[in-house]
Length: 277
Image (tube, rainbow, N blue to C red; front, side, top):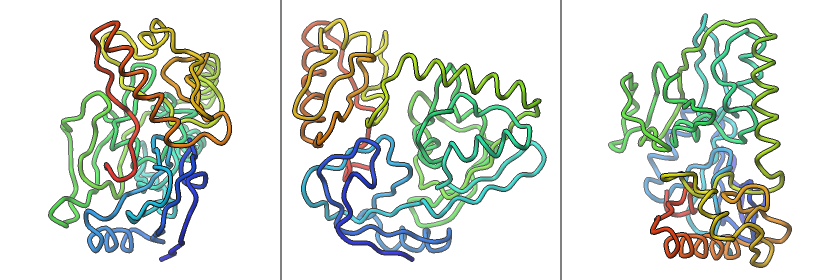
């Protein structure tokens, strides 16, 4: 078990910011992870890749438990069992080497598998929930359980319990086919989504895309401090340098208010604010 004190948001979140986490706990195996979550209970905030996380400015006293050491990947035919803390990018690379396809829609997403399952991550009309054969979870009552399909997942709503590991069912394919999918999906991402620090999509899509409403509201390029609503994609708020959580959240509220006023559409946040897990 590794314990660090006063860890800056820039080290924990893809957006960054000016917050500080008072206590960061890094379990070194799944047994330690389960033990610390049971011990901390509601005081624990589970951190995967930090790709959809905003850490409030100032000191944050909620204990953050990182899954970064929980990264084991094990193959059995066309199935792969992967720890919740494993990076999506690492899993995609390993699957490519094994000649297994199915996860290419997540290429370029800087998330952990556990985080992807929690939010039923999706892109290119695919969702990770459709690939899951079983999930090992730590349930609310403190028991470790195995869940099987059918899963009652929906758009951006996945597993409610704490994800320990996941077994995915994939399909065999030749490397050339996999490489073509990866190349195409990355090209689409790079042409439509901004580079730089962000939490990915800020809002869930409702009706038409959230980015469409934000663009029609004239908010692309809107800036507060170091945070800016991207000029490339209206559903991204990018940290242009020294952007704080307050800058980000101010733009969030501005976008919600303007879209509500103009279109009577209520935007719902896709990111997580530390302390509200």
